[in-house]
Image 1 (cartoon, rainbow, N blue to C red):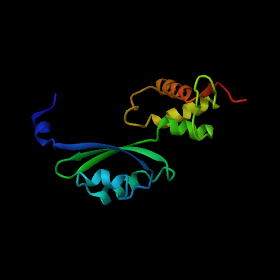
Image 2 (image 1 turned 45 degrees about the horizontal axis):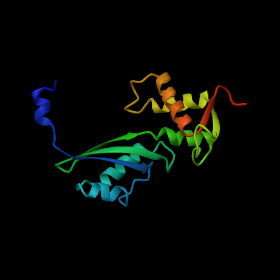
Image 3 (image 1 turned 135 degrees about the vertical axis):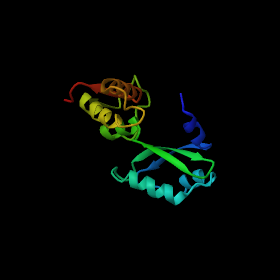
Image 4 (image 1 turned 90 degrees about the vertical axis):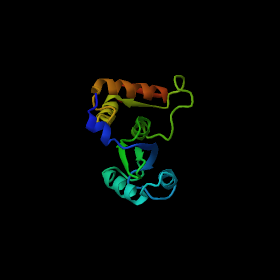
Length: 155
């Protein structure tokens, strides 16, 4: 239950914007500019904050960002780590998954690779309360749908 003070101090929302922006590469050009500009948000403030938060990642790493725009032209944003499919493709060294998953195996990965990806994804806001085992199971499921076979040890 919310308290009366929390209800009175809530700011009315204008929109929730989801973007995929390269790490350290937010510029007021498309796709960031038009998405934030239509809600009259400060583009340069977002770009500086986003680039500062994502400087620890390699450049051109696709970062998912959720921007909450308020009616008073202010905003908040959360940055998530790159998608599981991006990590799987990087670990496997492939450009894309299998065209026929379940029939054609694109490549193989070891459980150690899956575990390392799960440790990174555990820091995400939506995964922080999940156990490492359940995150690993989810990643293995994603790998199977991409045509990547997960083995105990690589030969």
